[in-house]
Length: 261
Image (cartoon, rainbow, N blue to C red; front, side, top):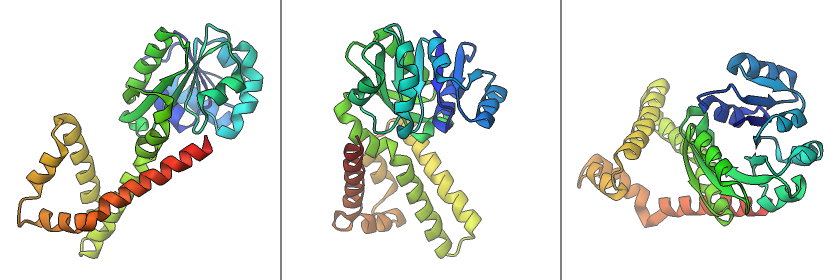
């Protein structure tokens, strides 16, 4: 299958980097420097013309800013035939909006990725539009699986996905930052606190993911009664404050996602 990209931003590059073969890839990017970088770094064919990328591809990843979608649609709509599948990773653009912009001929797939795909550890939610070619959808899932994990969901779930895994990396980093700063306040050197917080986050996430252990069981195993972890957990759990903060955070992000759509 021939794969095209419209836009060569960090998310597009993350998907591209995870592909085992880039032989049949063409990437359209309007910025000269970025286009040249992608060709040099990944050995892919590049072009400044989005329509050329569409014509030479079976599956096209749309990876542009939301405000650029209409201009891209105007330039490529006629080339997006029924044999082609457009895969959008554009935030806030529903399948209905994409269909209106790009016309009724091509297959459509909407994807909500997160930044971790740049480390081949991403989480991508996939929603095919009605009538999307099943082989193309399978191919999209296979490509994205190279950059992490995937799940196929209904579009109605995408606001929650955006709040949890789309915005989640920032919350994760915020917690790590808070731990670094708290460690420094306890007397650790800043670089030591940073190392301890980063490796603790990374190691815990890796272990939980690979072991499949129940989270409550894991917490109970670390937070032994009367120990140091239990003392800290008591502060986090006071009045349900921490869980309430997380719930409000995700609710606010989901509400914003719905408003933008």
